[in-house]
Image (cartoon, rainbow, N blue to C red; front, side, top):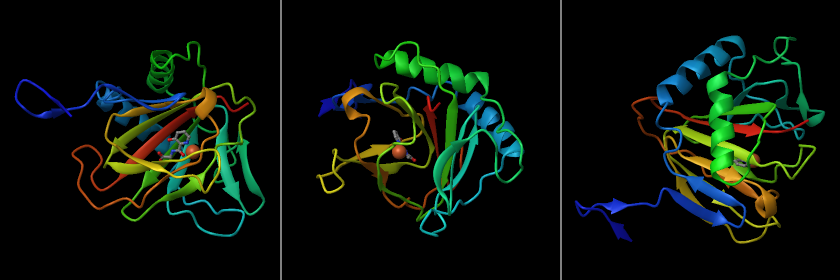
Length: 215
Ligand code: MD6
Ligand code: FE
């Protein structure tokens, strides 16, 4: 444990989760007001919705997208699509503040030149969770993923290359950014059911924004 001048617990700004995965603590806090404005403009055009898995289950996490490709699931499977199935139109463009954050976080983690074309936005309410999964719908696994946590804290589960491998639990909080690539790219991961709480910026929710090069 590290103590600061006041005897409080401090955390390193950068924590290695595994080879190829790093948490940049508070990296997105500096411009959280700008991110919230951009988030509202996206969700005004493409509202959060609960998608259905190929197995027929309604996801507890509500989702939307921006950028040229959006991640969708329905009874026919998971895929990236340039069209929002709810509106029949393209997803809203990726706001410049989103793009800049993704690029600078990736560079900070050692992935210079990251140019995301897909941005998936997940909204968790208390009890919502994401089961262990691998991110495998993208074309090029050499590209990293940049994941931004906003609002209520959550426990991120971080496993290995097989579903049954032991998982590590890490708390992700408002403003934390996880960059995930290289040898970690196909690790299983998930999110534990969200606990109730109140966050000054997002109230009773957690929002996670993940940036990918999908196409
Ligand atoms: C979430 N994140 O934190 C869900 N995937 O709400 C993910 O599934 C994820 O954070 C790949 C890389 C980073 C992530
Ligand atoms: Fe994922």
